[in-house]
Image 1 (cartoon, rainbow, N blue to C red):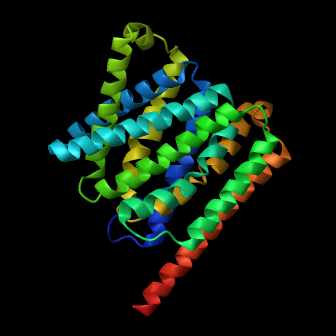
Image 2: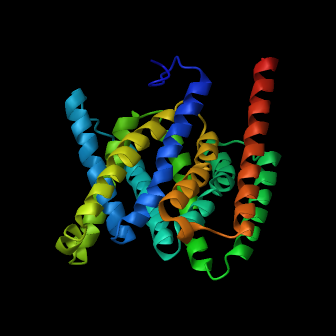
Image 3: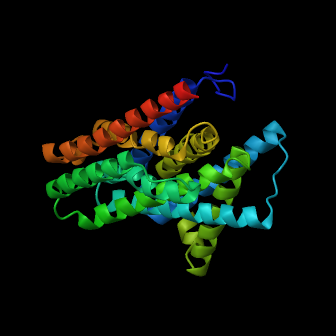
Length: 306
């Protein structure tokens, strides 16, 4: 049972395996974003709105008591919700103006941003290994940039999305120790849907936006909101109880591998990039893998010495 649904008694490798399964699911979000014909902002609104509905159904079915946060915790949830909404908007916008492969390659820089943010939020020293990983990732990005000239705007938006993703992971890594993952997900998705709903109302295009998706768009949005968001989001937040934000983002850094392969299967030639592009991505992922190995080795050494 601990393998099907990990808990406090599950060994650490089960949580790692579960996190990889979640990242594989997220690998489909880029392809779904490209298949959906509406723009980035409406995609994110429908994603968080439908996810909120699915989470409410889950709470009703399980007869779970609705969590009411204090004013302080609510303000943190609002901030986190705003960050994840902006992350998804920049993510899908980068896909719309470029392609899935380039956007996901930018997301693989997440560990570099976390290595800067995590010491600040968790009050620990910046490790030399994290600095070296950051330099390696920057080099990988320079190689990638050289292979895709003319895509600077998409790369800038993609890197912004990576930064927001890292910030969100660190922020949720703190609050998950105080609030149940399902409650966090419901409030953050619900707040996000309200914020974007008001945005469309204030811009006088609420009805137009609501009626914009085609039948196939609704099909893809339902998959995106239910499996890739409600389920995967709750699990990713829950797993932060057992894995550090850096480890979570290290695993999420594999999303480009899954996502690029999925995009190549779905879209073929339009996603094919130059060998230099894949070399740049390989450098970034290689740096992330080295950092993961060093952290694992250090953790084992600390356990041995205690």
